[in-house]
Image (cartoon, rainbow, N blue to C red; front, side, top):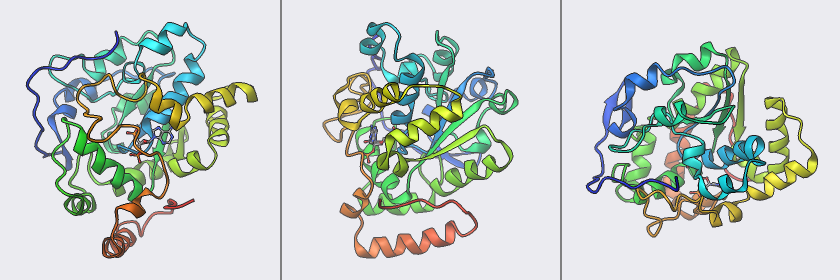
Length: 299
Ligand code: A3P
């Protein structure tokens, strides 16, 4: 299977309130099956707020576990089929749950953007490993803005300033960034099988982060193996790779904005005005005053 063909008429969805979170039907229409999803103890859940580096970490995990499988897999199975997006449901396409249920590989790598309180219970009951990735809010909102511009299953973002206000209010798909990153951070206090990664650390020293990831997963890999994986998952390599750059998924118009856009820390400086930055900082301080989580907006 090389990718998906989409139903002919797809239109941008409207946001609605779902369990207190702004959502679109593409992530809620299969809710009953998502909630009763049966996780297995060796499943690995990759949980993120959208645009935090999900695909990067997914691909690293895929290479760690399955990088030595037949070469054909590397050139013919896109990342969204190797690592199903659990809550995704697009008419006429297999749902994320169906794809996860049919995964031929062990462990199953499963992606979700659900906030911690909506993650299907069985992942916790089975004590599954959870790899969470957070990215600083300023780069995250910039990346999300460009993603919404090019992706037809997301609502229309409006102009940059409008989108920034929406993000601060938390009325965007998958709800407030603030609660998402803090929710998993708090969960880590009581559930030890979460590895909490930061996008900025990954950019700063990918090799070090791959090593930490391996140690969490209990994988013994050689330095050469880790180096090969770090290089294979480098931004430039993933941008060229049809299996990771989303060029096979027609819901995205890569001419508007590429999926592999910049991959940097600090691109927010090219978007925020001085006034927007002051307003954002003020709001951020209030919103994040009760957490010990610290994220870097530059490295
Ligand atoms: P930008 O839009 O800032 O470029 P997700 O996979 O969660 O949707 O996140 C996508 C973001 O991660 C995009 O950010 C993308 O460029 C960045 N990204 C993906 N792979 C990367 C890599 N190998 N190195 C650095 N950034 C990467």
